[in-house]
Length: 349
Image (cartoon, rainbow, N blue to C red; front, side, top):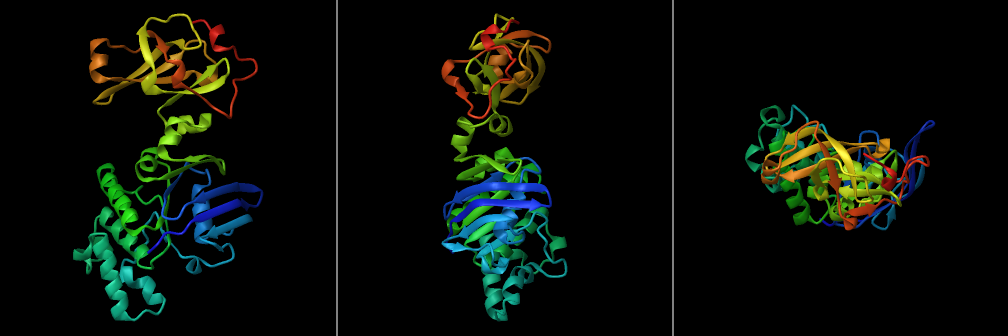
């Protein structure tokens, strides 16, 4: 197997007057693990289905490798899709479920069963070949569905929220298996998820979508460390969005320093009140309400190592000064504070 590049050029999808995907431009290198990330209704699953051929683009061009595939049926695109529900046939055992695709393509029984066994071995399910889906756990069903997608030897594997039905512990295990398989096979994975943690752990390329558009695409480190927009900073998590004299900036929550008592607001600090304190094991997370801040930047978060919090604890209702260094404030390109909003140095606690 080998991975093909995928390119979308001004691709849109409309349902009547509703725009689900709006003039998206995206290039995914061959052999990459790409996660389409965003909230429900952002267009990520529609984008995946257009790549698969299960939806037809209203406008634009879609290439897989060097070929324009927008006019081709799903079976002719060199892709395979793994659905959120797994969609295993309940009356077929694991071996026959995996062999079903080659059977529909007219592959002889001996060859398709040999290939099906190879795929079951690849996902470490060879010992379950003769079990029915109802006799498997959710994680085992997920592996069989993955084997069934891979048996067609696609150049692009499309995964629609494949881990959403798994419990948290199993999700981490299967995540590691997906990454292992993608590295071993070298094919392109395009994985839809609404989980920031999942996208960060798996992908080489994170594509953050909102309202049918791409807000930012980059490596996990780039997207987390240098969000382009207020939406990305908030959705990826780990950042506060703060009004500064030059506009809006993102400051990582772990770079916020808290002092007891609310001091005067400055370009690098503001007064706040502690609203919640949550113990998270190795750290404590505090949710703050900025005093006299503009509404778009009023809610803030800070995290402290557990031992530092134990030495100087904060309680709900305490007033504090939240401070950050100038180099920790990353300017956002998309948004300015409202025209009538005071600059940060004009605010008083």
